[in-house]
Structures are given as C-alpha cells and as structure tokens.
Amino acid sequence: MSTQKTWRVAVLPGDGIGPEVVAQATRALEALAARDDELAIECTTFEWPSHAWHERHGESAPADYLDQLAAFDAILLGALGDPGPTSDPDRYLLSDAVSLAPLLEIRKGFDQWCCERPCRPLPGANQYLADPRAADIDMLVIRENSEGEYVNQGGRLAVGTPHEIATQVALFTHRATERIVRHAFEQARVRADDRASDGRAREFGREARASQVCLVTKRNAQRYWGDMYTEIFARVAADYPDVDTHHELVDAACMKFVSHPWMFDVVVASNLHGDILTDLAAVLNGGMGVSPSSNINPSDRSRPPMFEPTHGSAPDIAGRNLAGPAAMLLTTAMMLDWMGVEDPAAARAAERLRTAVSADLAAHGGEARATDAIGDAVIGAL
Image 1 (cartoon, one colour):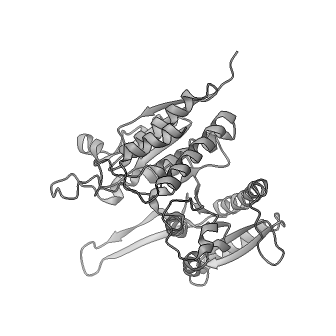
Image 2: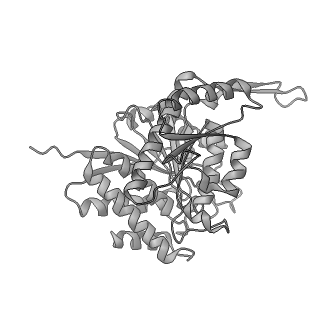
C-alpha cells in the first residue's frame, strides 16, 4: 500500500503579470514531478481573486472562497492589483483596498501569522550596493503577519469636510508577539546549523555566537507596544543563550540595511515595520523580480500557507511576455521547502528548482529575455 502524499495546491494567478509568471511556476512543478516518481503535486487553478472576476461578478472572489481554499495543502499566488494596461483610460480599476483585500483575508483566514522573506543575493542578480561585502548578505526578515498596524480597526468621521477625522488603531497582543519572537529564535538556530553544514559559519556579537536575532521597534516614539515587544523579546531570548541578540529602531534599521546589511541574520518586526523592511531587503537581494516570500502558520501545518513573490502586478508590462519569473520560481521553491519538512521528494525538488533558477541568473543576469524563454531555460536545466 502506497503512503505517498499528493500535495494539493490552489493556484491563484491573480492580476497583471501574475498569470504569466504563475504559468512558469506550474510548468516547473509539472517538470519536477515528471522527473521524480516520488513527488506528487496536484495543482488547481482559480480565476479569482482578480479584477476580471470582480468585473464579471461584482466581487473579487466567491463568498465561500476561503472555504474552498481550506481544502488545499498550500496556496500559490501570482499578484493582485491594477491589471492595466495603464494606457487604457477606461480600464476596469479597483482601489487598492478592494483589490488587495483578499490577500489580507487569506492571511487572517488561515492564521498565516508569519511572513518570511529571505535575503541572500544570487550571482547575476542586480547588485545595488557598491561595497563588495554586500555579496555576503544573508538575512531572513520575519514579519508579524496577523495584527499590529494592519488590524484595520478605525474609521472616518465627517468625510470630505474640513472637520474630517480618521482613526487607524494598531493592536498588539502578548500571544502574537511571543510566538513571532520565538519563531525568529528557532529560525536563527536552523540557519546557523545550515550555514555550518555548508561551511558558511558566521559570528555575531562579542561572544562570537553562530546566529543572531535583531528586534525592530519604534519604542522611543511608540512606547506601549514597543516596550511590550522589548520585554517579551528579552524573556524569550533567555531560552536561547546560544543566539546573539540586538535591537534597532526602525528608522535606524532602514539606514543600516543600506549601510551595512551584512551585520544582520534574523530580523523580526511588526506588521507595518516588517512590510517596509522586507521590501528594502528585496532590493538588497537584487530587486523585487528575484525575491520570494511566504505566509505561514509555523504552529499549525494543517492550515494552508500562501506563497507569493514580493513583486506586484506590474501593469505597465502585463500581457507582453516581459516579466521575469525568477521571484515566482524561487517562491515555488519555498513552497517545496515547506512541503519538504514532511516529504523528502519535495525537499529534493526545492533544491533542484532553486539551483536551476540560480544558474540561469548567473548565466543571463541583466539580459532582457521573454518570460517563457526564461521558463524554458529553467525547466531545461531541471
């Protein structure tokens, strides 16, 4: 009797360049499965959420779409937002609040409380820092993904008048803070072990520890949640004496991400601060076009995670076969990594896909090539 697991993946191409880059990701998954009898992945593609679906039905997705997605092991998302073309003044256009709402609903609906974005530049990717030490950047930015500044509590009074008032409430809980901080320390240990096995050991702090966690807040101006984050961070850190610790205010962290980002290992931040820092880290990684991302629930693998590249829908080039699919392919590799915790075949596939994308970047970085041509090259390399 076979015990092989078939991974069920909900594919949401979305808007703009989403369908183009997702097509290369599903091709890669098919190619990987065809080359390994022990890997079984079943992809189901949905037309929602998207502008096109909203234009036809008056909503971005069916009312029960979260229930439909709950039947899957993982979600692969292309992009959401203005589909363009921007040259068409009569295009069907939704506000960001409407078009991106499903993104937040999926994260909250499946309690995907952790967003992870790795930053480790690949040869061939754009290098925006002149300092040669930038080639050694190796950090993981972990963003609290469930609350904080993005709970969407508040409102507007006297709208459109000189007396208008807008409130936007941020909410921080002990539970969510403790779990994201503890996850950051656990990931620091995992990364240290991985570097040691690869001969890439690093040292942090005066004690020359093998890993580090940097907490980012704005506690000097936002005292209450900043102090709570700091106190919980200190208590959790006591359980990880082998991990170096560090604290930065978010403005200083942004400065140091640019001036000497190689000093960071694992960075943990609130929802808003993490959102900003992960995009900055994406530039250090070589740009949005090569930066993957995941939204996961580390404490409950029965809840489907969502994997999406850091880039948006890029309406200016949508439909022209110009979008680089590297970020989408590397995001797919992150999804395979997540599966690989239980499935050795998926772990092998993740490494093969990441290696193929990296080799293609190293050989052709900076060249202007069609989306499907890059897909062909990566799949050929598999």
